[in-house]
Length: 239
Image (cartoon, rainbow, N blue to C red):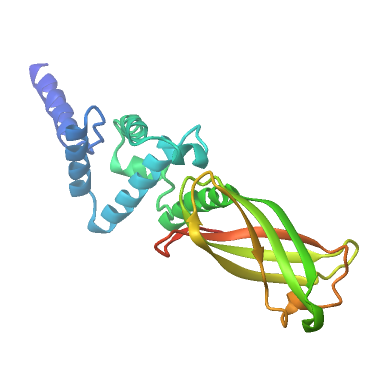
């Protein structure tokens, strides 16, 4: 009986000794050490897959219940609290379980785009075109000159030095727009957060905006495609 019991204990101990290492989410120090143990237990080909899967799983769990826009507005401390809770939620998982939960091999590029695109669209929508009007201004013997009148407000929270637009000029009932063109406008002195400005833009009269056949009922719509900062860097761009 004693011999049978000893063998059973030995088998049980062997099972403990050779169990797959798991994530310890109890504190950051143990967490990092447990990840190293898991990586050491995996095949070389699985280590990169494990790291990618872990990153995707942490991202998924830290964002649970929040929209992308809500995530973008959190403070650094709030983001760190979410990351801590996400790490704790993985406590006890083995490397193979992490791979399984994350869908084996997550597409990091797809995850990144899923975050960046809605943020860009939201921020571009905060650069508000409050009014957009088109007219042909008579200039005596030199003929008519096209004018685009805009009133915009910058609610993005960042100074903007250049705006890239898509302008569409169309008459009701007309299937083809008179104009459908992209262009940019460089702002003298920038537009600061919360500031409202009015502009009179003068497109090239020899281009589509100067077409004398454009009817008086044509309506102008403006879409913001991209915003640049005073250093010339892109702040946000529509995909």
